[in-house]
Length: 228
Ligand code: DC
Image 1 (tube, protein in one colour):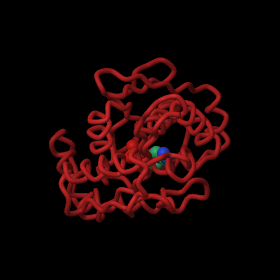
Image 2 (cartoon, rainbow, N blue to C red; image 1 turned 180 degrees about the horizontal axis):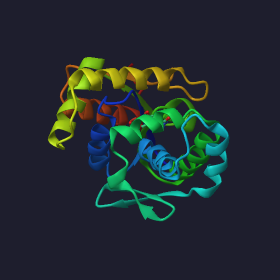
Image 3 (tube, rainbow, N blue to C red; image 1 turned 90 degrees about the horizontal axis):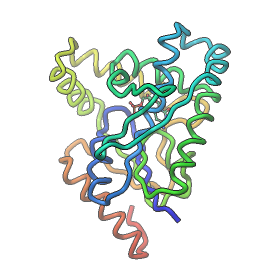
């Protein structure tokens, strides 16, 4: 049976950075489910379908195929065969993604694909609903969070490095809005699974968080009860 690690948490908590490093240490595949939702959102954006139009979005889901590949430890996401990795990381796509990921048709499509991947492969999967909905049987579950201010600062620095025009206030406001949307939607809202370990990374280094996750994996593999 494959060994699955689920990492959930709000936007900007550092899930992908940490999951990628831990996956490398363990020689596991890293699956970024946010990228899959972003690829679908990019399709709706390109087709000019409004994020409020559930009917059109549900119908368009039939036209979309999302696939993944792994190149040198980096996940590549394909939208109907086109590699869209370089196009999905903008704030605009992020906002639309959060809005359209509330719809059942969008979630059903990706949840099924995510489960198929996890069934046969040792992996670390990050997202919002992995421990609660996609992989409730995952051997290790982590809920990774940090304060809005910490997440905002991290995102601000990232965007500045990319040369994007933004202010810290606006980034924090967007993060609050995204938390609100992701945590309060009807289907698969972001929340900590009962058996997930809470890690607040606000005053931790990346290395410390990775170490704690590797320790949880070690405990589980040795048959020890995970300390929460
Ligand atoms: O992790 P991210 O910022 O790339 O995710 C973008 C959006 O996708 C997020 O705001 C909500 C949605 N998402 C989701 O609903 N379920 C997941 N498992 C992953 C992401």
